[in-house]
Every structure is written in C-alpha cells, then in structure tokens.
Image (cartoon, rainbow, N blue to C red):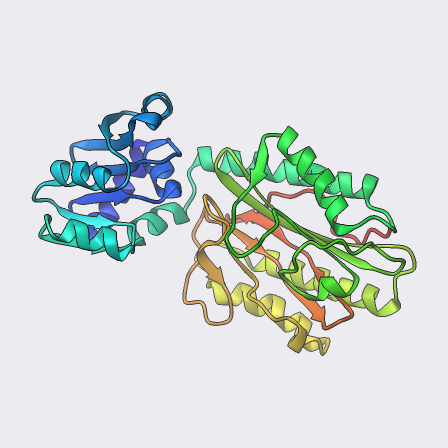
Length: 353
C-alpha cells in the first residue's frame, strides 16, 4: 500500500498538485484498501477517509493506515472535505460539474483528472497479480461447467444462471459494467455475430457457435476471458474461422512483451485475419488493460500510442463476426513479462459439444 501511495502522489505532483482525492470506489480501494461510499484524501502527511457514519465501521476495519473522519452524506461530505483540504492544490478523480464547482468555491486550485490513478494502476504489484491469477483460475473452472452443462435446447439465460451460481459460490461477482444489462456474454448462433450481445432466451441449436465471454470480479479485481464452443454439426466455414481466430490470438500473445507498442500486438492479430480475407469482420480492438475496472489503460488497438511495460495486465481477444450467421472470439488475460504469462489455462482448441 505504501508503494501505491508513493506512486499516486508522484503522478499527482507531476501535475503540479499536492493532494489527491478519490471519489470513485475503484480509486478509493486502490488508495486505502476500503471499497465503499466514502471519499479518500492522500497527501504527504498520509491518507484520510471521509465517511458517513453507516460506513465508518467497515472503513476503519478494512482500510490500511487511514484516518477515518465522520461526515454527513452528500453535500455534507463535501463540506468536511473542504475543511480538511483548506488551501491545498487539489486533484480529484471526479468530473461531476456540481462537485468540481462546489470545491472551487472554497479551494482556489482544483483539477479534475483521473491521470494519477490510471497511471499508477497500469502496472500491477505482486499482490494484485496474485488476485488476478486466482480470478482467472475461477473463470477456467467456469468453462469446465460449460463443457459439462451446455446443451442443444438450453437457453443462453439458463446457461448464464448456472455459471453465475457457480461464480458466486467461488466469491466471484458481476462487475456492474454499465454498458450491459447482463453479468456475462453468452451468445449462440446469429447472436454470436454481435461482439457485445445481450443474453437472451434463445435456445441453442444444432450447428451453433456459442461465444462465452466471462468478465467477473474477485476481491475487487476483474479477470476477462472468452471461449467459443460448437454445438452438434458445426459447419466447415465455422471451423475454418475458428482456426483463423485461434492462430490470430496466438500471434497476439507472442507479440506481447515489455517495451513493445500496443499497436504492434493489434497488428500481429489483424495481419493473420486480413491475410485470410476476413479483415472486415474483425471490428474491435485486440485488447485492453484490466484491473479494478473491466477496461483500463492501455488500449491494444490500431491507433494506440501506448507502450507495454512489465507487469501490466492486458487482454488479447481477436474475433471474427459474420453478420446474422455466427461469430468467434478467443480471449485471455495476460501479465506482460519477458515471456508473456497467460493466466487462463483452459484449452483453445475447438470443443464441439
């Protein structure tokens, strides 16, 4: 925790500010070890949590080396915050107009920027990597559940229920990602041609390709993996596309190294798919950072300017999506190192059930 705080303050100081304030729960957790309804303050004198009374018990118990100060909820918490910060130069992670303007009325220098948090969070420490590896191993077990339970006649929603029950028994939970109504992506047949398909009541049919994208949170941290299964009599085209995606993903994994560009990883994946004349069907970036959020820095895409560093955690997830027919995606979460560490061990050979 001390090293995290040093990094956070360094990036805050780089912007010309001496106090860093976390409103977002992910940043609060990273700064303090406590995830809840509260505000975190970090400066050279240490870390303070401004908490409503209903959260104070947990805040004191779960945080590390923090002074916990009671406040009212809502506007009352801002009043308490202002008293603590006084004449400091303050960087906050909130872009809420009301919050920024309220603080500016009493604090002369307030900057809204998530940069210190995202820069600090890009490279994972050893404790974070252990949690991510455990999270990834649970996702592997969930794919074993798919092998045991997925069947023709079962609906996407039914499979999601089975998988989420298993996940929650392993202390793994939905991310609450705002762009979807479902905890998972389970997409069979034509639905699999939609990269971010919503889970439906459609029943799996003979010949379906089924994309199962598991993005779940364990002890705060998100692991992300995708496997595509076949059901019954899978077409020759689907098998061909699957093998192209598998080769593309392997090329992407081999391209992941410290000090290489994120664009080069995307290029490695895209080159293989384009060579096989399916380039127009690869309609998203190759990957993204993971951690306390589903999508973090860096982005592994065609226009990315980012460079990979040792101990970044990223995904490699090329896909081919043929509209109204089927889609195939294969994804692993990995740790960047001199030899890339793939955190998921579940096979990437096509399994036809």
